[in-house]
Length: 367
Ligand code: MRU
Figure (cartoon, rainbow, N blue to C red):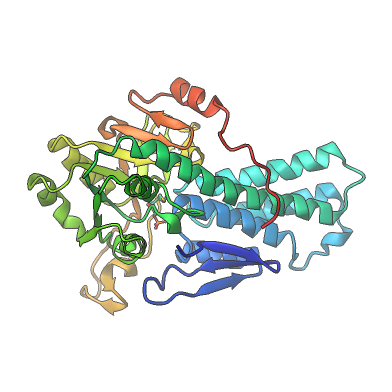
């Protein structure tokens, strides 16, 4: 599978997902503003991948100060500069909580490094601490997805036909994927599963990315348009649904790619299990319910045009929310890297799950 991102020679190379599946090219980013732009234009996308890219973005920003002589800063001034860049990066996209989760984690590592040895640290020590944390966020996501996949595949019956929406695969993460991680693990376990992938209008993450990933691994996949999911269920052509998430509120409400809610409604009507797969970094216990999750609205051009060609009349008014909200009571289970959560979803239960020690105990040793 292609790498979503790669750190090499003080440069972050991001796989340009806007060009997939036909062109494989990497965007070299040497400053945090380039990373921010790549996130905004969806060159890197998917909640966990956005988080990891932003972490590297902050490390980059603190490596090469624009107009700031970092070497002359005190540790505290360096920290304040990191806060400024963090604020800018957080603005890139509003819905996926992994973005602020990763950046907050970066800042807190910087703070504790400074607090532990305030006077003996050089600016380069602080930079190394930031970069090591970015590598760790990346590596933990990769390992976490594999674990999540193993847990999730126990819910998948042999021979299951699975519907997925958007792309919650290796490309949306540091690797392996969440919803596609469960699908990969079920396939590897010899369960002879097959997948229906929605094209995912308007930006076609399903048609361009999910089918691409599954074909590469020879997992049987059939592409459908978004409007076909209800009829697919009525015809009894699928056994279960698995999607990813951009943010999960304490009551189990899930923000995910626009169209997810329609699929959940259909699954309820047709009595089909509807699973969400996401790392624990996608959980936002500061929000009690989904209505409080900010939903990104994107450029109308994404809807008035198809593959660069205008398809709608000039002057038409457009609404283009990139995500929707699926109420927790439609979700059969939420599969995380710490365990599987079944309803009812509430804060105390989540806190117990989050409090469980992560299975991942390794220390990053270079990449
Ligand atoms: O707009 P995108 O492509 O970033 O949206 C991606 C999704 O909605 C994914 O389902 C979600 O981020 C989970 S990715 C593991």
